[in-house]
Image (cartoon, rainbow, N blue to C red; front, side):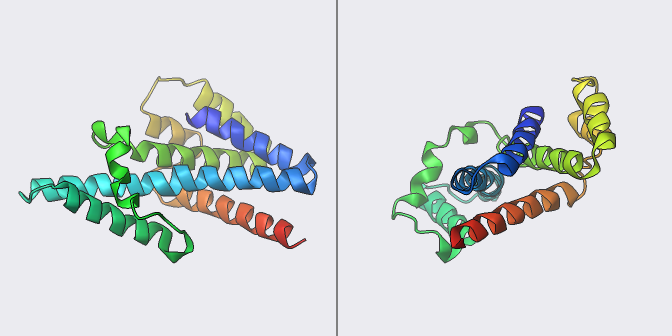
Length: 183
């Protein structure tokens, strides 16, 4: 999903530069929602999954009430008072099929961050980043572990930099959205 998400980010950047303000607002809103759903929410899911495994491994019983409580705490931590949630949000965990695959869901957030980092490099560095993207990422296919392929393409997922870059892109999009809303 990294390649397709990177290409989506590049298309979004192009569209953002060529749309009128009303359409830019729509595009930015979609982009911000994608960040929220993929980077922040999937990270919350991963943290919930890890917490539930820790509770189980400690020998404590995993009751629906306990799982609801843990999920509600994380939801509050991640989204705070800025987001209104309904009273049943604590039960949301029970309808998320990703939890059937142990420690799988985090890959959405890391893949999204990697894609945002690649697109950021392409947009800021130009040709050298494009050549790395094509030759060191796309052409490599499954020839090595993904983390090594990404590193050779300029995205080191063993550091916080890709996530920091993704968060910076989010901030830029949010700032642009807020500026357009005030115009």
